[in-house]
Image: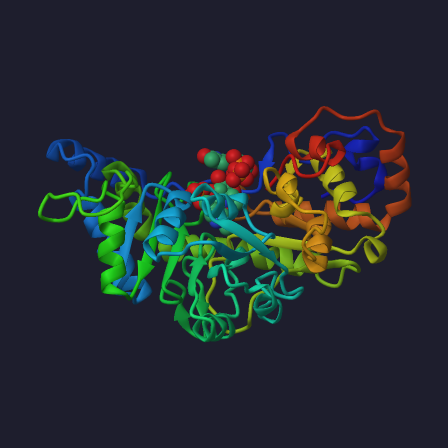
Length: 420
Ligand code: T4K
């Protein structure tokens, strides 16, 4: 554990971690079970196109989430596109800018117009008080993102959608295993969309899922993900190829068996950070509503530069010199990333909370990326750097630019080019 300034790598000591510590590392589950399943897939010689492993995973996830339909998809981004198309959303769609760029790309890829809405400073999710003001005659949809797995203001957004006859869908990419008022995310809006990418606590390597309680919508999505084929074999819909393959489903079924232990591992790491960073001035650990279930996948800090003494980017630089590759998700906000920046009229969207958060949010290595003692070691470096903030700042200013890691390089680039 580093305890004095001279021990920091930026002052010439060895980095705290010999190998890079990343934000996420995929859980891989029980290898023998995975290999058994893959072997079964190979024996069946049924590798894709709604095979038995995909069907089984759909049924099991639907049961776990308490939703009528769970449709496995090739990834979360295409799943969002299919959900938007299947719900008939056209024209303008209200979205947060504080999200992974895939949320907004999905809208734009379909030729729809994203209208950026600010978020609530506490939850980091769409602020319902601001949504209504952005509704125009062209608006037909709202996408709420359950950022970091913390549920959106589901009831308030549903009320707005109902009053204005808009389709509400949720990007639940981060929110598998999280609850809103005790009910699993996956049951809300017209549809919810999950990412099952390798970086998620539960994954299928690449993959996604759409959940809905609407039978007709589920049927449409089922056809759309398979070129528009109906069960009869006729093409009756616009379609694409958004199917999940059997190997991905084999990974999903294997991780499903480890669901509780994966969350428990994440929870323990989260609580270690919570204890180790507690009471640190200028550092807020983003929390969920008490009493709700969660997957503890992301450990998200907000760094107040005045109280902390260092900016988020300065702290990031300290961590990187220690081989700790924290991330500033989702800098600089989608509205400042291309092509959205270039499309802006002379009056940029008013997103004061988002603008502040993209300068303050820092995601720490979490879950499977870290082992025993790592959360404490990372936290100790944060504490040490902040306790000696002026010396650290001076050292950073003196230092020659370091080798460009992705995030470091981003600090000096024009906004809008990286990170989201
Ligand atoms: N909506 C939201 C709100 C999302 O966050 C996402 C995806 C989507 C929609 C779209 O869903 P997908 O189409 O992706 O299913 C990563 C993930 O690729 C992306 O799925 C995720 N959100 C986003 C938040 O994180 P990057 O650009 O940060 O990935 P990358 O390559 O930098 O990896 C992140 C960390 O994980 C690094 O620390 C390295 C580590 N890693 C990554 C991979 C792939 C590993 O250790 N092993 C691995 O195999 O986007």
